[in-house]
Image (cartoon, rainbow, N blue to C red; front, side, top):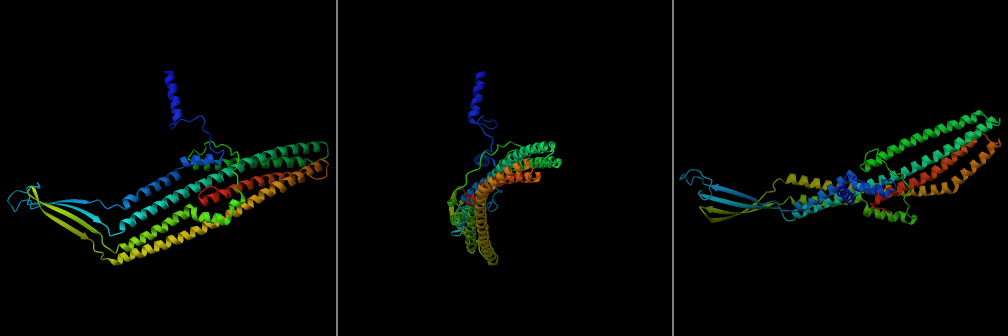
Length: 422
């Protein structure tokens, strides 16, 4: 019995049934890919957009189908000229008509309705792609910000330890009559300020993780792995403005949806003009007398498009909707291309800032601090100068990490506009 239970447990784990965690499952957050994979499977907003796109695709077939045929039975002369009591038996009434009729729209209307449904389905698919691109961009940006917070906290703690050592140096100088008590107090004040910064960073990290968990459809307090590294930036040649603008025009999900909306509006306008013409109803009627069919009737019916004023109003409405779709597409294109230029400029500025911080600002800050520390120990500069040099190191290191994070956030926005990864 124990063996059977153990075997069943192994089978359940192997099948990956809901509610059973696998031993190899990792907590998301270590890489951007882990966040995206989890969101792709679990994000409810993306799931709803996918289902809406599937529903729109299923509307295509009924949109182009003929209406269901109709069947009608008419019992004529229930008393057979007063010779009998009323009856509902087809073989005993005067005559019985069986009518089968089919409504047939004017030529081309069914094709237009099917094409409109197909274009609306394309638009829904574009909106689903756009929703995913938006979610992916938010997760990529959040991962970069979490990386920045992690390093900001690490740098702050390192500077806090350094300030504590400076406090010890100031106390030693004060005890030896070479320094002032004010230097010790200033070092303690700096440490308190940095501890307050750590509290703020911790709170910001909790809020950011809650937003990430929301996108992953996880509890707000669910654990996330610490970001281990930022994704690599593409080569500068791949960020050519003209080439990316062309790709955005052809692949942006929002523009794709707007293009589908324009084509749909054109088809709706064409359908509105076809409403000037009548729809038909065709029917065939066998007539039963007693127990046999004696007559056949053929029926043709069509509606009379008499109220042309209402049809003209529908046509004007379709023209206005088409103009609105075109204007909306132009506005979207302008916005998307403007965002592309803005983010390309931002990523270039972040590259330059990172290079400047790594090659100039950080080495200079280190040299300045070493010089200030030696001068303070020799009584040549005051303690405020030493603390300022220490803060320059912190600012330089933060500037480097912030530039790296900003570049990835800008890259995430560019990939959102492209609708694909670079």
